[in-house]
Length: 372
Image 1 (cartoon, helix red, strand yellow):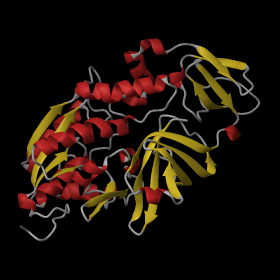
Image 2: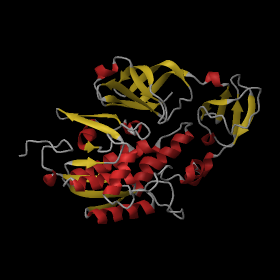
Image 3: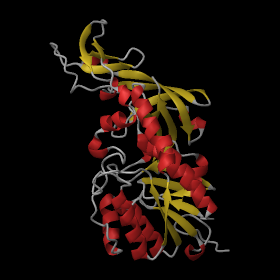
Image 4: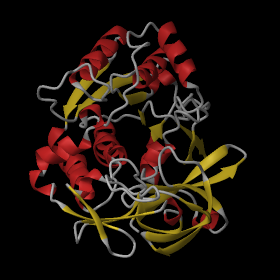
């Protein structure tokens, strides 16, 4: 056996190492496939067909569209690697789209990309990769993974603007030990340069910006399609319980929202609470938005519980900053988070992700779903 670890931290020569690369058709995953092939690994590219676009334009800013599948196929042909397409529309509808819709109806603000990673991508694709006897599942996510003593830890990516660790907090320890993220130590500009050197045909392809099944960011139209009964008129109330306006459905509102409330007042009004049981929206001044205590459910611990005993950092939205906090684990799957300073716009349905800073960067310790 080879005594040296290869670039993926596996004790085999690249030529004896089989890897599955999750290929979405974008520049990141295509570059990863090219890097693996270039280093001599035995590469199988897998692309997931997750939803049916119907009559939507294929050249959209969404990921996983019909155009993306064709792009992934072309990249695989160019690289001379095996390529498979898995048809997961039913799994995706049940595991992601249905959850997305129901979450909005509960007055939450969901993150379907986390649920997609949690279900079809890292659960089903993980199992397929194992069935193919692959040594690792490799993706184009921007996170760093550091493996030592047969244990892998996840860190924020070098490129702060591309870091996707927030979306991967629910990855299990078993999955993390099998996953590899070669782009975590690169800037996005470096990824595109590598793609050009490898002559990958999607090197200049724009990044996907929309949620794959939400065309042009219009999530209300998706909910209208699957749950047309959800647009019920209701009351907008102030903090004193006085009706100050009406709405056309709670799904049109998120915590911290200011625009689109359509209620005039002496001071700017923000959405403070969504009450799905009474189909009402509670509004008030900005200073009432700040919260210091968050309750979490369905938590996933990636670090050691001892690491959570000290003050850590948390993120309460994907674009949010790191906030100092104390974590109190309640039982095996819930926690209470106490923020050092109040934070605005914290919404149920979003994730709260835990980080700890060490000499390698910001390590992901886990996280949970904000319930209250």
